[in-house]
Image 1 (cartoon, rainbow, N blue to C red):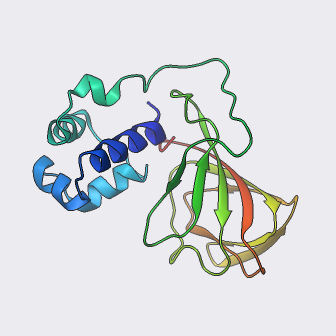
Image 2 (tube, rainbow, N blue to C red; image 1 turned 30 degrees about the vertical axis):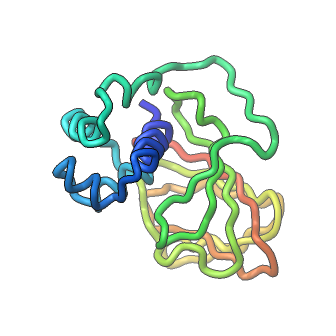
Length: 186
């Protein structure tokens, strides 16, 4: 199941209905924290939780998950296109652009990150799987556990994402980083 696609769909329907996360939490009897993690594709909800979310949003279960297991053989995303979403607001100011959102059943998730100047994520976080990073423009620091690595345009890093990590940007402008991750949260 494409967790990013599902997360985007849940957020989109919630916003279309004019509901806050708190209101959805109350209606679904799930915590606001869990719903936030679902919408930010940090956790995969159980079938029971998806059913409660669907009911709280006023859609059927099948409407909520329709198409999430389709597997297109080719996905083309023109430059500058692909859905943009914020992940973990207000804890992070990184802007994420999905580079394969219409491929629903996949083994990896490619994203283009816009990393603003400063400390765009308040804390380093781990997640399941592995992550590949390539700086496309600008420069960033990769904080990985207790280590820091300076990465400039063209530099790459491949990491075990179960260790706490985050990107920092002390440069004069936003940096762009290609991020491809794999694991249970794809």
